[in-house]
Amino acid sequence: MKVENKTMNFQRLLSPNPSHHQCPNSNPLFSMSTKSIDNVNYVNQSRGI
Image: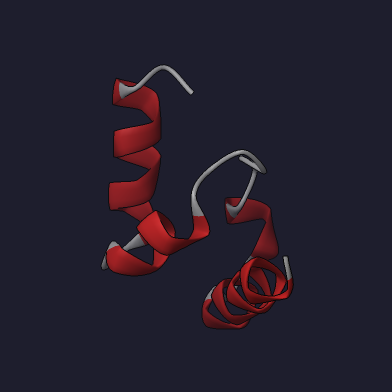
């Protein structure tokens, strides 16, 4: 899906360190709706991803 690829590229541009995005199965729209990478990591850990 082209939209998903653009979203992932946009998210990668927002992140100063691409290594923060270690979960390829995460929802890019959900990641964009989260304000900080720390929140994304916390949610991923709480969901057991």
